[in-house]
Image 1 (spheres, rainbow, N blue to C red):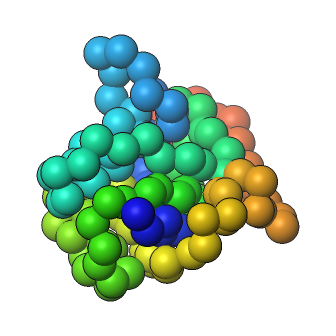
Image 2 (cartoon, helix red, strand yellow):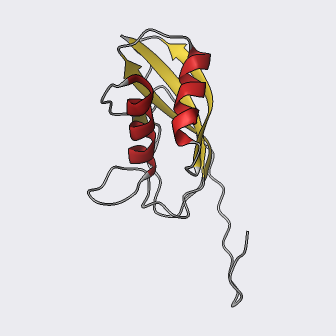
Length: 124
């Protein structure tokens, strides 16, 4: 078994937050489905911190344990292949030791809030 640290970027506009919820599209469910398609393994990812509905991320860290021994580049590219139609990308992948934990090994977190307070809708 090999543990990988994945750094993610996503647009949460159309998702119902990070955590898997029955019958809803979430960031975690999209990622875990892509990992399953990549390696055929059912996984549960561990995240540094969950996000709410509509929240975007640049640099969200998760870890996942894979049975299949492979190199980090193949993990990144393989997962991204199955995410290509989703608003989610793996920016980086690293093999890490078994004692690494995305949440508990974090040394810092950054949050940036943009509040648009106007009548006209936001168009990106």
